[in-house]
Length: 487
Ligand code: 9MR
Image 1 (tube, rainbow, N blue to C red):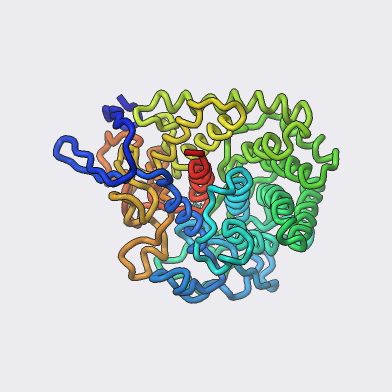
Image 2: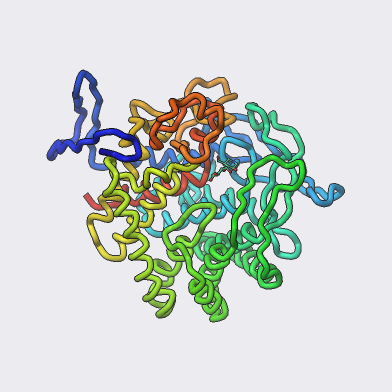
């Protein structure tokens, strides 16, 4: 019994199959199976390319985007929400999700997933993605991340703080990005955005040092200025949408996890003991070391300590943190074992964007395996990847453009407005959401619909079927891992 779906699930062992095409028949239904040694390259590459399709401020040319080409969008100067006389051009970045907003914290997390995917699994990330920079000598995944990083630098205010977001006052209707001409505003700064940007830019300064030293220096200087602002503003103030603003909130209860991540990355980038002391102090406040999402970034700090700094991090940030990490990541395995589909989410865990905790669990188990070699961790992590690709109660591949049954109507403005029948490929849907559905979704589902089936493959359903950059990115991390496992 699978508690989250009410399904009876069974595991069929097909034994060893030679590469080729097969049909699997059961109870009058038939599915094609492709068996190959490297089955996930194309989908992982497409997930990276999916971020290219989210690029803002530039034309997507036919040579790279095919039927999904469009002219440049969002090139007008942005106005400061708090000082309407002030405006400046802020160009680039990725559109966050199905809307055209750009948000610093979620962008920082997305970039971090890409940079760590590349650091840990370079051979798992394709380098022939047909983006404008392909063939430049810089790996495509790093070029794609730079698109966001260069935008992030422009989101910093003179005093070092980062604006929380660059959005309009309201979400656009379902129009193409180039037709979205209303004023974009630099919304107020926030503690969480500043700390996440500082962390991400410090990480980027190390990653890009060999290929773009000028950018690396600029990124580190910006990270330091962000950190100085945080030191001068120790009291956390949650971001709130100003009166009249209805775009994404990304509100948080604390910035301790963001500051922890920033202290770790700044220590890794500079080796200055003050950053380590601050990271140790923040770690002692308690961190969720297996959270890798936009709201809780403790796991990114752990990634930095365990896999970049290693034993150099010292007894607290390595030895003790490692033990803590192994214990916390054991939770994902227990959840996976309790699920009929092996999904590392409890029945009451189907939130908006349930794909995120599921893929976060996969990341935690992958890292656990890397630290200990425990095989069952990797096997359970693989089940989360399978979940994303179709081993789930909806019998649906959540990545657009892949599989025999995949999401067709994501809540994604270009997919809805471009006149092309198929959605933009390589985007992953947030998936079932039982906890905070729209009333309109609730109405369309039977009242006893089990959590793992609270999903509508319908364009208006942002609550179950939106896409987001920070859902693509953990999938890229996980895909890159499984691409690089030796046969
Ligand atoms: O991913 C966010 C999810 O965790 C929240 O529950 C939800 C409602 O506040 O918002 C999600 O983020 C959305 C953001 O606010 C605006 N852009 C689209 C995002 C994905 O749905």
